[in-house]
Image 1 (tube, one colour):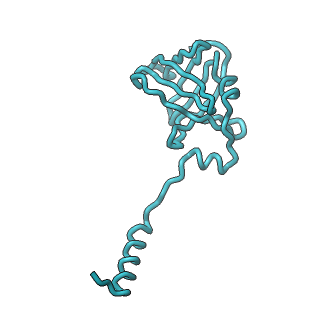
Image 2: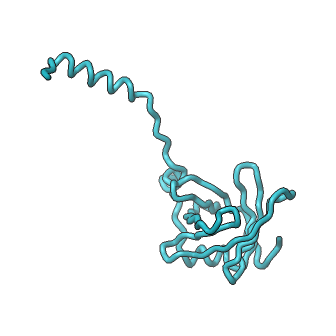
Amino acid sequence: MKYTSMAVAGLAALLVLGTSHVVFAEPDQQTAMKAGATQLTSEEIEALLVGNTVKAKSGEKVFYFYYSEDNVLSGKLNGGGWSGTGYYGITDDDRVCLSMAKDKGRLRCLTLMKLGGEVKKYNVDGKMTFELLEFQSGNHL
């Protein structure tokens, strides 16, 4: 097939126009890093989580999670409606991986980022899943 330069130019213009309205959202984690957030190390994650009850917010919901020293993770929704148990582990590559009963053994690994006094969890796609609000030593569920 033989294409004229005008046909090729028209096709190129059509492709540009057709894709000019595509918006690619930047992952939350990348936005946080551009704002100066730093990833917590395994040791920092351990100090924040192990043996502590963590108050965390996801959207408008507030949860409490207890990260026991034997890797059992227990949680509840503030005000009732959900509670559960599972397990967690802190990896050598600076993430916390967890599995609750609904995960059926599948581990979800999360990165913790800190900016100022805020600590947030991000999933593997870079989406912010939880903001960690408070840390208390011991089980306060």
